[in-house]
Length: 133
Image (cartoon, rainbow, N blue to C red; front, side):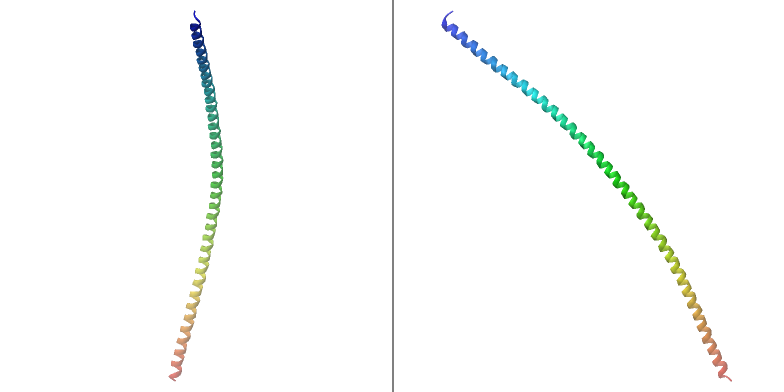
């Protein structure tokens, strides 16, 4: 074999070695990227799970807070309803007392009118009887 052929073979072998090195580097990059992608997917899944857990905890806390608010509102409304019922009862008693007082005043006025009418009638009769003698 001649030196030219030998040089040519050496160059081809060098080129092949370079290409094998490049292929090896590319394979290594693919592996690194695949590992990185796997790590990112796992991290994303972990983050999603953490977010879901946090949201579940927030929902639970919100539901508990709303239940407490509803309970407090129901208690407040029950107190207001009772106060309103008590007020209606007091108002009814006042109306009853006012009606009784008004009836008593009407009766007193009727009695006074009757007394006045009787007194006037007596005066008329007296003047009639006294004037004819």
